[in-house]
Length: 335
Image 1: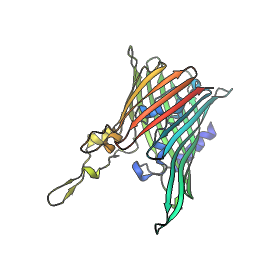
Image 2: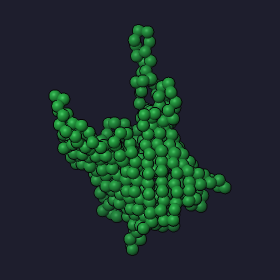
Image 3: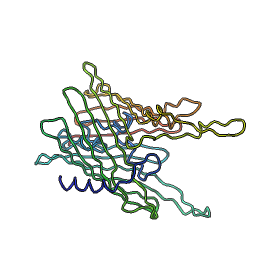
Image 4: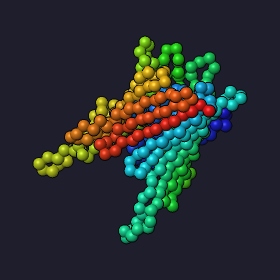
């Protein structure tokens, strides 16, 4: 444990200033690959008893996940596919460990040189392999955890490699139904880069709250993401205004709008039953992906979970635009 924390500390010291959007490498690390995570809007750090969740908050690793295996897969735009897999194990000394992998495959693409002559097809992919450990504090509802992950990106004959860590804390009280999580994700840096162009990792700080209501089969979730940076607004050029003299006035994002872009909300119906339904809304996705003159319901998410004996089937529908959305499928089993 001491060696793990030392390595995490060294990685933390190398982390560059945090940014959001397309200013970082390995953006696939911020894409939800867990159906439950996606159905609740993404970025959730308070989900418990789900081995998927250790990829988002390592402190959620618990005894209940022992010998649990999960595999997730989904389609993104075009031929792009994404997914993840995770496994948790409790050793005889009582310590819980976790291994996981997340990937994004870009499919086959046609290549051309600078003269427009075809060079054949090529492919690209991103992958991250992680190992995690969690430590619960005895006789309390608190736990802490950390993931160490190796990240690789390949495009045609080019590649890059990075090492990063996630550090998380979780308070989970089954008696009151309250859960509070805090995670700092993607602390680290590149060891090798594309064409000697160094890029920062998508570092992110996330704070989440959830509560199981009394006498009502509902658990609500409130997540505040990208807390490492206040202004995460994006001025959409399609919403710019042009006057009669062709003067362009860009869209202005106010205080309240920027505040709400940090917010993700979700609810679970029948969260403790064999069949449950999930709904979510990501305000940032909704603002950035909505159309000017047509309702697109961008930012809304939905899904369900179904327990059949030792198996659990998960599904999520993630609404982005009228042009494309994602469907995620997951299967977990207690070995």
